[in-house]
Image (tube, rainbow over all chains, first blue to last red):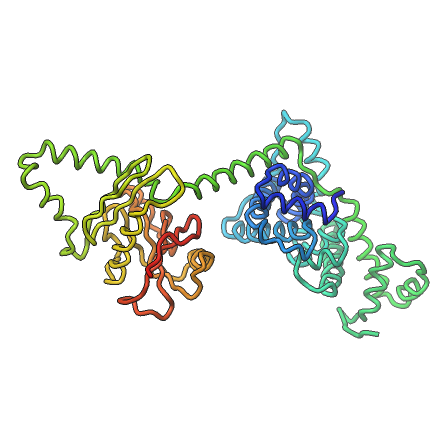
Amino acid sequence: MTTAAQDAQLLARVVEGDHDAFNQIMRNHEDRVFSVCLRLMGNREQALDATQETFLTTFRKAAQFKGNSALGTWIYRIAVNTCYDQLRKQKRRRTDPMPEHIDPADHAAEDAVEAAALRPDIQRALAAIPRDFRIAIVLSDIEGLGLPAVAEILGVPVGTVKSRVFRGRRLLAAELGNRIQ
Amino acid sequence: MTRASNHGMHEHDRELIAALVEGRLDDESEARALISSSTELREEYEAQKIAYETLRSTIPAKLSESERSALHRDVWTALRAETASRRTPWYSRLAPVAAGLLVVIGVATVFLPGGQDSGGDEAAAPLSADSSTSASTSIAAESEGGEADIDDGETLETTAQSGEEAPADGAAAFSSEAERVREGDFDEGNLETFSYTRTSNAPEIEECVDAAGLRGFRVVATLSETPTPQESATDSTTTTVPAEAAIAVAIPEDADLGTAPVAFVDLGTCEVVYTDE
């Protein structure tokens, strides 16, 4: 578990051109970035693209990080915005839903996909609720982030996050109920 | 108690139900009493609980080892490519074209009949300003630095270098281009090797110009390599940002084009490559 101070120090080293430091930042945050992107995009391949783009943006903007929030929060905010951008583009050229890419020769990949796979009914229910509610419950209930962190990532007040989580859960339950019926 | 309603529910009730669902309450009696008080509240609690428990039971996704190494590889490949393209000045990408042009001109000068006597005049012809639709561009390419040969105001000359800095004579070339811009002579197809494309306020270009420290400037055109005829034919959907755009031409927002200082911004690096006094 990295502390905010360690993260800030790492980022300062990145700005100075230390590539190992950036690799370390990636290792610290890549799983969660990928997980958030996967829940938002519903597609492993697109989530990987978004994860890559997130870290490219992180590198490019490293010098702009002011340290007002935790590095992780800053990176997840970049991730959420990157996913939103990709979803907007995706809307323009509609693709098949959830073509999970599995290399049959790679058992580790297979296991990882399986472990991360949401039940299809949950994935569909998540996809059916508005984006603002979806991201709030993904960050809060799946990723287990506290409400203040979610608020920082989304750039909204904590009260708004509370409301979105509550309404998001209600909508998700309704969607799950509808699917069951 | 706040009465901000949410589907008729008090905010306090909502908070209490959420806390009960998440197991954050030391004393649950108030919350339990609340949900027992009405069917609506009980249903709300049950819906919240189902959703919360379903989501909490979901394991956060992880990258597989192959995905992880591919991610690192791809990120560094992209970053190295970006760095390399920043280090390569836009004009150096034209080195092969320039070398080809020099060879053609050299061969033509030596072998064409009367080339020795009239070659100077013929060569100067396409460079003259008498045509409003075309002028040619000559480019001197030198792999280890050297001087570009500027001979009149109608010629954009570029020296390709392996180093990182623009050659000194690049300034003279841009200065003559600035003059051309002030004369309003930058309609599409004006040049053979480059073309100017009038542009609208494409946000990417405006942002790049802002990033170059030219806030308050407006982009009047972009300077780009002219696509080959084949590329032009397939690229029928030219938008505000030309695919080959290399340089934005900008002048101060309220300035008169005829007298404005002109700035050239490299759209690859968002840096000013030349500006008038």
